[in-house]
Image (cartoon, rainbow, N blue to C red; front, side, top):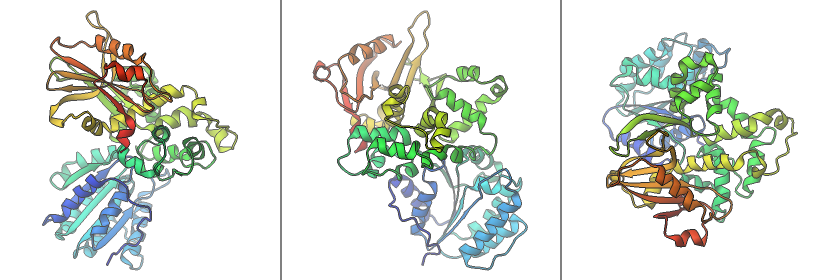
Length: 482
């Protein structure tokens, strides 16, 4: 009989690989300590609740959001109140985490138990001894039950990295770490009914990305523009207020530093030196630290370029804003936030938004890159063939031209697949061919290396393009949805 009855009513979509990985721990003969991290709304708690269906007992605890006035004592008191509810016992106000954790340990010594601490960074951020007491509770009580799985979860990935994963106190104790990324496109597609055009779906995904919580808010009976208006440009809309609610608690310190970096990346990827130059002088000293934390939190990707001669990575890299919602908010919602909250913003269409086609291209590129493994399958490329793959760039020098490729795949057979990712509301015309030819001509590559152009599109290509025979693959991105 289940201990916890507060299971969500919404269907569970996706995460089958992650769920299977979690279920493997139930086959062990010893207790497991698992760390799950990822940005807020990515579905960490929902995944663990689905995992909990395979246990006899499920006990769940969550920390209080770390508002400025929240104290260590209040976090502990809230934990004690949750203990009373989870174990159906009278409220006992423990004065120390050691006592509270020991009391939980006493109650999980028997049976198939899933013990879940959600937003653990919130629980322990005010108490410097909190994690040491977690370690002691694991060593002395929790792991004594060989059928127990202990999962700690958090959105503040940099806190988890620094305080748990890099801590000598937890060496050899953590069974494995799972980082949840956005849902792949084929799982995103399950939030719609049949009959909705791929272009309409991609318009919504250009705002939501593959974030499950945002996709749950889609009304498939409404069009893309209507859904986006309701979520982003209507007072009280989920994505109107989401930025401040999500972003401010992730880093457990002033978020303005991180926000400024994201604003710099809104118009496209940049190298670290360019980001540092564009930041105010007071921010520059810690830019590497901020960028690392933004990567750990899932908002930013670091795309390394590599040598086309050796296939080995170079030190050159660019930082890319990979979170579609963050870019959409900073680009379009933030500047009119007061009007939106007062009901005074008039939304006509996405195409009326400034620079929309360019921004849509960046958003669409993120979606394709997030589903690169599906793309490889469509191109009949196996993982062991690929030497390197990423957005690619090379600097202009006396010996070579500058060049930027949306997505480049370098195979061990000395072949480059030069992928042009193109989103258009109309079919793509023949002018795409000289555009891609110029990019390939600029690549500094060995003469023995072949190049094969690939076009990824949504709304079709002209007959002239399809009959030209120029592209090795012309891939309709709707196939990434299936």
